[in-house]
Amino acid sequence: MKQRRDSSSLIPTVFFASLVAGAVFIYSSSMFERNAPEVKLSNIGYWNLKDPLHVSISDQSGLLEYTATLNVDGQDYTIANEKLMQPQKSVSLDINPPKQLYRLKSDKAKLTVTARDASKWGFFQGNKVNQEINFVIDNKKPVVTDLTNSYSIEKGGSALVIFKANDEHIKSVKIKTNFGKDFYAQPFEKKGYYIALIAWPIDQPNFRATIEAEDMAGNKAEDYVRLYLVERKYKISNLEVKDEFLDGKIAELSSEFQETAGVSDKIERFRLINETVRAKNEALIHKITSKIDQKKMVTNFSIQPMYPLVNGAPVASYADHRIYSYNGKIVSQAYHMGLDLASTHMGEIKVQNPGRVVFSQSNGLYGNNPIIDHGLGLYTLYGHCSSVDVKEGDEVKSGQVIAKTGLTGYAMGDHLHFGVLVQGIEVRPEEWMDTHWMKINVEDVIKDGKTIIERQ
Ligand SMILES: [Zn+2]
Image (cartoon, rainbow, N blue to C red; front, side, top):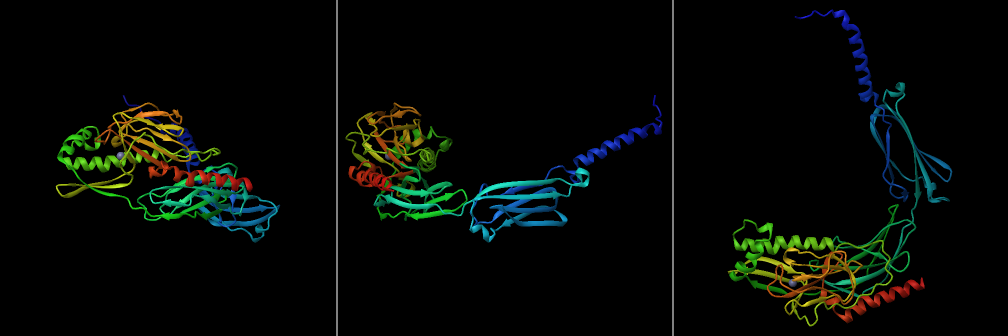
């Protein structure tokens, strides 16, 4: 049975429903939004009086009026005082310093921003904000001076730099290069002094390094690192790829890598291993060896010449550019980024410098591949090991056996692939194995730096 409704009984329900709808409308409508305008300052905490202060004020229902007042040394400077005809969603102000600010007694400043929006909330008064932002005025550039450095840098090699970078509000200190790589420094001996190792990558035709310090207010200063550049030609090797190698080592490696899964063409497999897998393995090495503790003060950095394998004669050199041909046609190429040292079967690998193990696993072409962090962004790497006697996090001592040579990864005979890296860049291991080079480029520079700093 259907019941007929009396339409008059619906009136209170409709009335109540419209009240609720009205309330919901007010509550959710942008006309009645309840959020105060938002004030944002681009330069947080500091102002260099050079770049304008960017202030942005924004609001959902639109701004109707706003003011901005700068207070320095007890003096108010009105920056803006606007009433808008039409509500505006956002306003941005570029504040240039009033001239008087260049002769300041105090470095403290305050910016007060007030704003009111067009919301009907608050009995049509809108939402208001009154925000005070305190900051420090700092228009002094940091002082940057190169104190001492290695006399020269060789293409593919390393150099040491000791410099001064002083500022009350220092933010960052680094050494910029002409090829986009930034080298980071560590505090050295005393506050305001720094030490950094830098490197000239083999694929860069030119080298230029500039120390740059920046403070919290964005003031920057630079000093050019005076280095005598030594060009160095590296070997180019033309190698013929044999079927025996493609069907042997390459076929064996192919089964290990996902990059070569399902690829049956043996040249294609070789190319994938020699280029794609190598690039991936090296990217991991670069990532691991890029780290430097920029907070740690260096007081006693000393490094001994390296000879990881006693009587290990060099069998392949660093930065050897290997061009591979098959049946007279070039099929692939690669750079050999370490020094290969011949070994007796499972020869002991010893470190001559203390450090921390940062990697002890297998890494594709590099096989079992321990990596040691010696501080100052200097790392050593040992490829193709048959066994590794240390694990990640271990501290190693000078003279400690860390692994045994082998032929894991892309190795045809038992040998050690020895690599040295400076902040993620492979450098000539031969320099770090050369007593004379180390004396004049590292030891003497540190001694000289300490003397200069003591006198200051
Ligand atoms: Zn090698």
